Length: 209
Image (tube, rainbow, N blue to C red; front, side, top):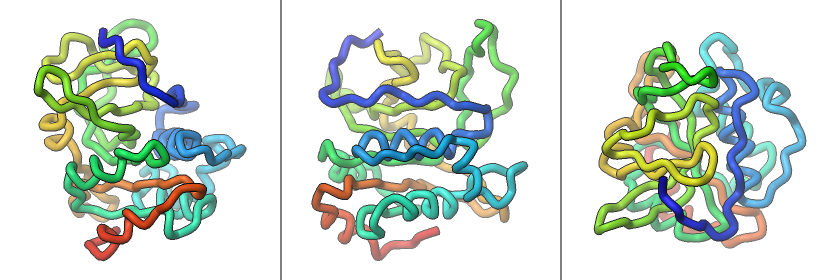
């Protein structure tokens, strides 16, 4: 277990139900930048058009735009990790990203989960370097924990917070959209309404969902 103290760290927000990762990751993102969202995860499902499918990326963006100015939200595909690293260097920013979750997980009963690999929203908070290896600090709303002893994942003293080697994260940073198209390197960056969001403008004119 890694003993890293993150300044101004916001504790994770666990799922209320297994299919609520879109809403839990959104609520974490807003809490991390100091925006209060009083609606429950279930209440936020009003933005989800197909409850059996789950939250689509454009619906995540709709949620964000209900609480933040458009200039402080940027959701799109084809991000480069170094672009997110530049933006997330500020303590007033956080990202929601969409991954193909193929981790072996342990359920709340302590057994290996039988949930199949699927799309999953997590939060990307910052980056750290340990022994010349770069890790992404991710906050995962799932109540099923990633199995320990994964060669590219470090558990931390914070609940549902992991350090994942950037190379691994990039390899699972994709998902399928409802229409079957590949959702490649999608991320939604949120900037505190009290902070300068001008850094987003240099990335705004790229392909969006």
